[in-house]
Image 1 (cartoon, one colour):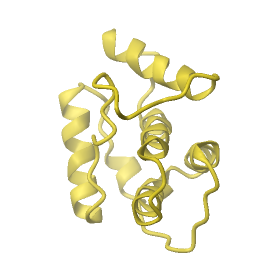
Image 2 (cartoon, one colour; image 1 turned 120 degrees about the horizontal axis):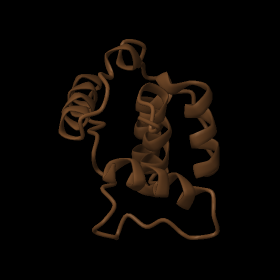
Image 3 (cartoon, one colour; image 1 turned 90 degrees about the vertical axis):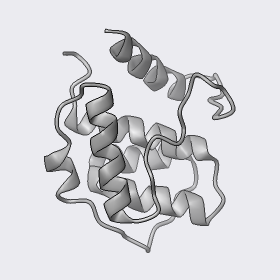
Image 4 (cartoon, helix red, strand yellow; image 1 turned 45 degrees about the horizontal axis):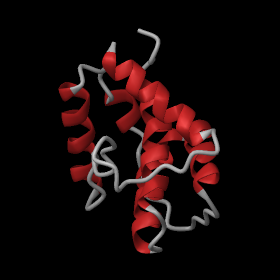
Length: 121
């Protein structure tokens, strides 16, 4: 129940005028690894086990790296994941390689988690 409240509140933060900051100790902006696709998948599995989420196996079966990506803001990243969750690794790599705010990854990960795990359980 606490996890649902936390994930829902993070979703609400992204849609409000409040600025999300990865400097806060309450927000884990480094929950998934973007070093390699295998490390990414492993970190997603570990996270889902830790938080007792549904299996991410189906969502992870289509993950790939698209290097032809341009994202202007966190809203663009979230919209891309909502319509195409398999792009999460690509967004993570893009944010890291283009020195964009880590908060963009966090918000995208929230959308990715919602794509394979109902927060209404």
